[in-house]
Amino acid sequence: MKKYISVISIPVTDQQRSKEFYEKVGFKLLIEAPMGNGETWVQLELENTQTSIALVTWFKQMPPGSVCGWVIETDDIQREIDALKAQGIEASPIDQTPWGKFAWVKDPDGNSFNFREE
Image (cartoon, rainbow, N blue to C red):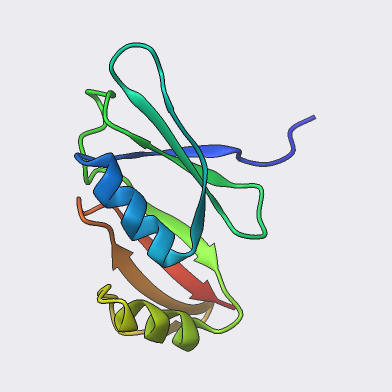
């Protein structure tokens, strides 16, 4: 039985810089450990969820900046965007659609995701 998506790989150039960015967004570090091949496994979890991201540097078919379109649900998108901007993180203006309010955010490599309020 399938339960949920556990890990989403996010391709980055600098794991430490990206880790700091995603921590500002609200992710918490789960694992940071050497993999034994010169690479480091960096995994962060979005608080109060079972979904995490891995900051990867080793997938040639996934260049940094190539992931987009994933969505973080929120109860108050304006609060989220204001908090990000207070930390120096840019976000798009909030877009009202028939299926919810959305705002785009890009990480330091250009990977993008949305905050969404229903």
